[in-house]
Image 1: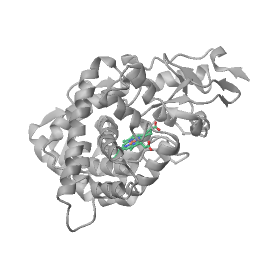
Image 2 (image 1 turned 90 degrees about the horizontal axis):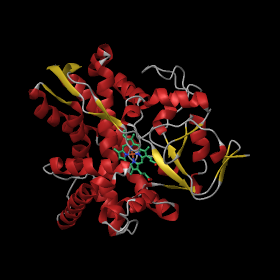
Image 3 (image 1 turned 90 degrees about the vertical axis):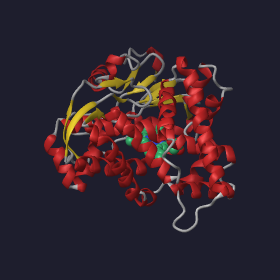
Image 4 (image 1 turned 45 degrees about the vertical axis):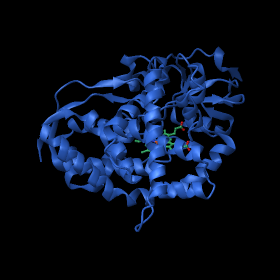
Length: 404
Ligand code: HEM
């Protein structure tokens, strides 16, 4: 057995803006230097698909590391700090099991599919507003979609979407734990907190009548039956907005970025919903946006390497889908690729994405609607890139197009 700190590991500059424009080449180079491990300034990084799976088999010996970052920023006793530390994602052990068991029945593929018509309506409304502009920043356009879908799914007015967008931008940037934006984090959280409390109060005062219960009815029902306490209900609703926001915005923007260079695929999506699904699927594999921190709560031995308790790991979910040992020709974009393994796009283990079926449904419906209404999109400016840790993706994708 060998101690992890004695290994001569490749260094991956995950915080470097230049690295963010092409992490794949650097990850591939790191795999050439060491078959499965690398390090960055604050964590060790398992770089291959199988190693991530092997490590995640010990998930009960790790905690999600977001709370540690809040402590480092000295923000534990602030409203935003308490929120981050008490989200379903940051909770562990019995508390997480209880929360997850209580709310998982609300996040099934069936429930997600029941909202497809609503997703189509939301995208149609957005396109009605944005298409007359003739050209715009697709990333900004895409950012309105997941917030508006979530508002509609929980029966909230979409009037507050522009304000919420500003708050969610700040809360998303909080994922990189940059202390210089603390004021924005606190005010962004305060706005979401007011919005959610008000929404719950309104629903209690005026319950919906008729029709199937919506997501909010179901979550309030779980609260009434004792599955969640009031604070947990509030944090969960805020977290659903934040967890679905920059992930979905970045994924949709990346699909556009990829498809601009594949006009035949783009045109086919407008006519063929099954092909649209394949494009979404392959885009999620090709450009996975999420990575997550874990802190070991016990010593761990992986492939004869001893990793001591307290070590931080950065799990680069998306990068694992470019591992050539698992995916044939991983750097080629192939919507018809043979399925050799399941890409770890939505995480693994007890915290695997609760919203993954909603995420896929809204990407498929949104993308299909876009391709039907917007013809021949082209770049009219160079895209920038968001830093890698947390939710990675494109920052700014100015496009022009013709009306379809
Ligand atoms: C393309 C879009 C999305 C991606 C790539 C994504 C990715 C992920 C990943 C990787 C995790 C696990 C993080 C970890 O274990 O550290 C996660 C967790 C989570 N996601 Fe998503 N997500 C997406 C969209 C959504 C949406 C739309 C929602 C809500 C409607 C959502 C709700 C959640 C929740 C609640 C968790 C925490 C689950 C738990 O801790 O038990 N996500 N997501």
